[in-house]
Image 1 (tube, rainbow over the protein chains, first blue to last red):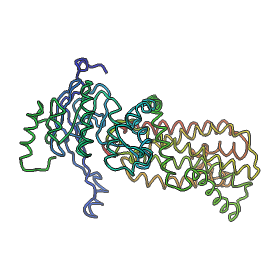
Image 2: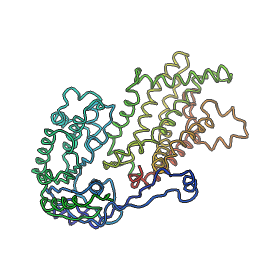
Image 3: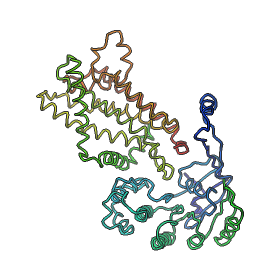
Image 4: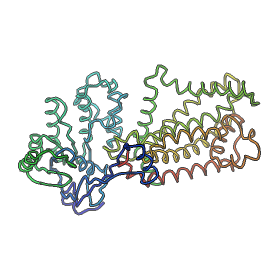
Length: 258
Length: 258
């Protein structure tokens, strides 16, 4: 797709993006409700706007943090960049390859060994078998699994699981790396290792979009931050300012966001 | 159709790995492992032979081979459906996190059963040897009915996998459809056993043509008439075109429903 924005080095661009979900009310309360629903309007649902008129752009080589409360629309934004969701209205433009660390080990199968999962997960993330074999050793080195690499991963500790997931996703070597709150888990040493790897990524001029609740990490990794609140983009600027704004927001009485 | 072919080529390594995963997981925890792929059809054949040849006294020479010749392809069909109906819903978590061609899941479900089917030829050959039943030259023709059956099965798999996303009742409905379909298809009997006046009804069943090629080649050592062969390819083509058209129509929104 030819796009002038791409020429100017824009990697990601959101224009008046709206994302609406149908929230289905499961579990009818009464038996009567079961029947009335059966005969009348069988899908009783209401619509929920996860993103309301959001516009921003991210240029090549930028590291941008997305912050906000639970349920504010951060993950929805990431999934739209990843191409999992398509906007209800508005335009999302993404140029280049994307690797999403939306959840580490999404697509891992508990009965397969670590090695088998490296192959499967790499393929799911869009690598070829040959590319995976080429970087398998680096993945193993990073994940530090030792002899567990040939055991089914259901025997792994959650730390090992995450190290493996992170190692695979960052070996994919994408143009854009999406990271969703994955550093909250894992021990300090692992977190350090991950952050070092993300830094390395940034230095190679890759684009990073990073969702986190940890302002320290956001300040450290990102040059810019976006604050999303109840589906709206509240602030877009230097991490310090945006983080201050977020902390203000946290002071307000906790109302269910969304 | 062109899109399907492109996705197939592009994701061939992923599809192959998913299909192998399916098999590996299916047999991994059992003591006999892959042997079950061979034992299953044998045990089924023993039961059917005892019931229909000994108790019911169906006058068919070498009933066990007669029944196997259609039962194995039938099992391929029914197992493929049973797997693919859950293939999108079961991978819903993954579909919500990684952008990936949706068609790989039903295709992999069918492919894993193709492998299973090929394995199940081993006990059949064994049975031929034990019973000193002739190995007809028409075995060489088997890839032809196999191809038409695969096309037909793929079409059904596309339909049932995506229908189950929107109506979870589909997985229950599929089971009932499959068992009813089994009895109206000439698997444990042949069409000669059905009174003439019902034949026009039986001729509406695509399975009649699809299974015919297998039984003729394995049991009778004959080739099907070209009418029968073109009927089976016609059914395969119609099923695939329809099934994939429906799949394609809904594949972009399914992520909101899984």
